[in-house]
Length: 539
Image (spheres, rainbow, N blue to C red):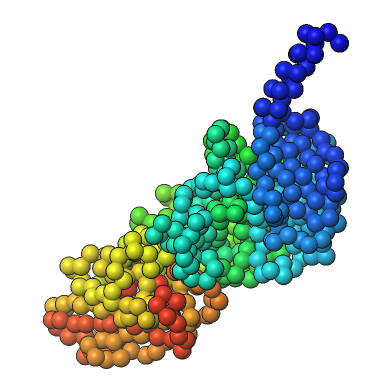
């Protein structure tokens, strides 16, 4: 071989090594793993174990991103599975890895030329670990950063543990993987990132129809835990669980590798996914829609329409005139709910969706009817908006030094700022909250309404009006999960009404206290507690 030719080959080999260039689209088998090359311009090459479906290696642009001590996998790993691979031709070329157990089939799909792993998980029973999740365990020296919330869920180098094994102190701040959450309805992409050429690895979920919890559910998205940087797609869990888990096909969901910034789910294309043969896939032609108009939403609040049954869930925001169009939905009979922001104001039962058809169905809320309001604290939006520490609790523990003093607090109607009213009452921290107000004349009988968003350990409000003790409400439906301390606020949304007899409210100065009561116990922020939505005294 001529010296010039040898030199050219050597230069080509060096450039290939530097740029991370890999072989063309395809797969091979080596060492008990399937090696898949996506054939993309920014090369993505990964390996999947033939015995348990773990992703053992992920190389993007020639850089190894996979954590070595544990794999990337569904749940905490399948243990063992029947794993197969195939190459499929359709509108494009695809490689599909299929992993089968007795109750679960998991798919990993690549489309030629894309640095993307398309994932889908079909289940017939809830996993034994009690939750359904995809977790990518990646190298923290390559991908230390987290998007969109930054260091709130970075728990590496923690100096102490605040609670359980999931809330820590780092540099004087409380941090937890739970503080990385985003409401389903707001999800776009959540990512980990880093490297000299700023690589992003992002999860996107085009729909969560088989997940549980509705449009406002939120769960763990990412966590730089020190040993590994973990990127999640939680499909269901016991983290503030409010409804039964759904079986069937979860996905597709997307793990995309990018050097050109953060991808958006709005541009994700999954229209081709039916070409690869996935159990439980329902094509657009086998779905239907609901259109209509929602009314009765309080001015200035976002209307949200939600459809659900035991097999699927969907939602849509309303336009400024109340119009809405659902996503394409699986055929079936659904319950239809209207929220103002997150507060439920209407329900329609037995709304039927048929394949290939669009049905018209309006929905009207009647909650915002005329009444004589004596005072109102907060808005009926299903959130603790504006109350003390409501601007902080999603991203830090209530014990964090950045939190404002929890009290006990006294709120004076007409003079106190809304931030003088606590977002939550903890039985052993700030119990009770006191409300002082003046009335021009004795009003006679009245109603006190206390809207809440979440209860922990059976907590519910009991009131005292100028020395008169209101009845003790029965315990709310139990949610067996921590709430506020994990940055969660949405539960069943109990609304309590207290009928105050005539003669208890007087002209001039009045005092109402709202206390947390419960048959359970606990210390500090794990004592029984509930979260406020709004408090209103009216006739």
